[in-house]
Amino acid sequence: MDIPYALLGSKQSCTCGRDHQVPIEKIAIDERMLDHLSPYLLGESLERVLLVADANTYQVFGDQVYQHLLGAGVTCGVHVFSSHHDLLPDEQAIAAVRQNIVQSGAKGVLAVGSGVINDVARYASYQEGIPYVVIPTAPSMDGYASSVAALQFNGVKTTLPAHTPKAIFVQPKILSDAPFELIQSGFGDLIGKTISLLDWKLSHVLFGEYFCPKSYEMVLAPLQYCIEHAAKLRERDQTSTKNLFVGLINSGIAMAMMGNSRPCSGSEHHCSHYWDLLAYQGVRPHASHGLQVGYAVQWMIRFYRALTQLASIKTPLAPALTPEREAQIRQFYGDGAGEILTVFRDKESWHREHDGDFQTRDISLVLKELEPELSMLPSAARALREMDIPETVDVLGLTVDTLRETFLHANELRSRYTIFDFLASQGELHRATQNILEPLEVVKK
Image (cartoon, rainbow, N blue to C red; front, side):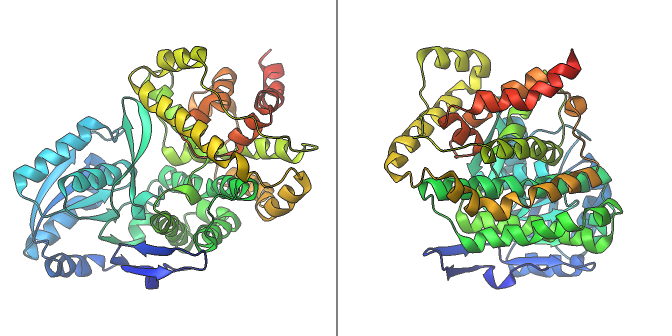
């Protein structure tokens, strides 16, 4: 399994009928990547850069990168966030990096780290109109190669347009030496594609939503590999760890091709975003994005099982923003309510626009189209157990009541069509949620 190098830095026509562009120019996965980094920067006239890291990643690799660049004639400023844990990709972090970019006169940014560092560096450099290069320190998430930034503004997780890195440089040993919880997080993020691909295909089958087979396959192949090799990943096998990283990069490339995160983010991510909001409100502790996504997959498997048990498909009920629901949204989301209401209205508009596109009421046809993905779900559940991503309710500081609220309201966070929207449109979301959580209610009593 490898990176689709032929796609890098080019625009190519696709069988889906669209042209795809992947602006990333270079990806180097090499133990001697530092020998490639400085010539690349100098060759791209990036002789003055700002290195962005946190306290952990600077110690792991950032200082080595800094010393190497100084010796190679690259002027390198440093912005190290003091936090070892719980750094958020919020307004304050972005503003701090932007200020340092201006003060240092940097022509480019080097992000040395993983999820939050990458998103902060991506968005800050995008806002300042300069390129950035990423040096991953863990195979922990799929956003390295994407063109959007996952940020947290006013406590609400939001995905905003930004830009892809100009290049990605990584040492494989750094990946396999990463803390296991970061490898576990990357696995959770990748296995989440089991659900996001299902959500995408469900919308395509029901409403004819645009679907790109090439992007789909780019995500599917490494997903299948990592499901099959979960036990090896648990042992920190270097080949399996490298292939996990390749899978995460390819997922990012698929998103860059699409111009959005549709192939890689669905209902499982919406659950994670909802839990991030609760953590921001102090209701529960923060947890890694990938762990949350992997944990959510186990519940989404149950919701797709509810779909398979339907006898028929009814004419969809469109979502409606009642005055009562708007008041509840304003009370619960606070300063972030405006964005949630915008999403809700976008979802209303999407349903109105696609009402005439509804293509089938034949449940057997839908199940036939989704069969390849549905057949992966038992293996995905097994792989999650092999990677020690548990099923117990309280593992992320959640409760049965929190899960119920999540399943009933997570689809408010994005306008994207998912299994939640399908079941809601069938008048089945409350029933499915109750059936899924009822065994836990019995245990609780």
